[in-house]
Each structure stands twice: as structure tokens, then as C-alpha cells.
Length: 248
Image 1 (cartoon, one colour):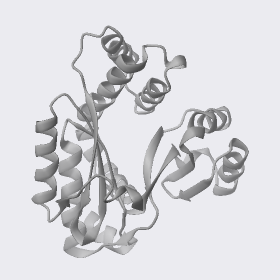
Image 2 (cartoon, one colour):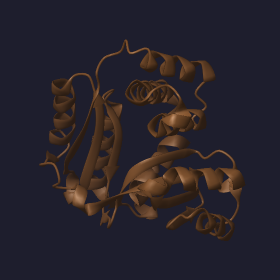
Image 3 (tube, helix red, strand yellow):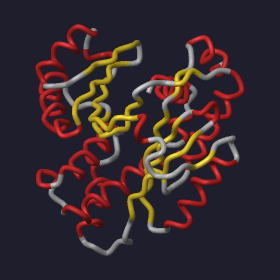
């Protein structure tokens, strides 16, 4: 997601990511707890938990926090969370997928609907947007692991399908069912990844600029600020020139 990734990098450079670190840890902990409750507290026997723990470690979540979240889920004394996917359209006709884990479906639906309606978007039916995306495995590394050729060679050897590299790092894509195998092979070469997850990857992107880009970013931030929202995906792209204006 070229546009989405660029916006995330700008947020990081401006320090916004640090300001939201507490919320990030909260969402990571919730995913660990849910995964542990559903599939048990052993990451070796629970693929969802294994991914959740790996992503928490990549974000430097303290070991004690991770262990408490696992114990909380494995103990069974937590709320029943429901995984829900919302689909809709943002400014400029951009397709947006919102993944939610919530113990209150009505609250989550209201917050998602409000984010769309207040920013020129509208929710659609299930399937109205997903067909424009592919669900794939994604492994992210920073630029320090090497140049594009080195990463591409390792990715091919690991069984990956595609690599995208730029100044901010490397993104390796694979079939969703191959994610654990590919991630393990890459870790043997490059060490622990920044993130390892199953994502919705756009088949094509819609170019945005000006006010539409600004409004879409407001909508994405409002969605990501919701405690119930775990992931947001959108099929947009914004030029480097336009991003420079927004970053000013």
C-alpha cells in the first residue's frame, strides 16, 4: 500500500508514532490475549499467537507485558471478542477494509460508521471492497539489512512471491499459507523482522492529491484511534510531491 505506507512513515518522522505507543501496545496485547484464548498459550502450537508475539517483540514490547497477555488469554477469564471486517469507500472512491476485534459489536460499528461518514466516506456491504484486494503474507524489514538485490535473492530462496524496496526498507510478500515458512527462512538470514502478518494487499491503487488526500488521512487516523480497530487497509497512492506538501 504505497500511499498508506508513506503516510505511516511521515507519522513516524513527526514523532506521532511515539505519541501513540501506548495505544499500539494495547492493541498488540489484545491480539495476543485473543489468540491465546482461542488457540492456547503455546506459540509453537498456535500460529495466530506466534505472529502476535513476533509483532509485539518487533515493536519492543516488554517481555513481561507479552507474558501477561498470554496468561490472561490462556486463563480464560477475559471477554469474548468477535472478529469483524468492515468494508467501505473513502474520499476519491478509495476502497477501505477495517478489521475489528471487539467485545461490543454495536460500539465498534458506531465508531467505524462515524469515521466514514464524517470524512466523506460510506460503508458498503461485505465483499463490496475485498474483491479489489488480495489477502497475502507480509514481512517487513528496515533498510539496514542490505540492498534490494540481496533481499530479493533471499526472498526467492525463502519462497516469497514479490519484494518492494525503497529508502524506508523492504516489504516481502508471499501466499498467506506460506507466511510462517517464509518468515522463518528470512529470519535465519536477516534476523527478526519489523512485522510479520497477513494483510489485504490492493490489486491496484487510486491516485489522490489535495483535499481528498487530507480528508482520507483524517479518516484513517480516526479509524486507527479506535480501541476496537486492529488493522486498516486502503488502496490509494499519493505522489512524493504531494506527500512533501502534507509533511511540511
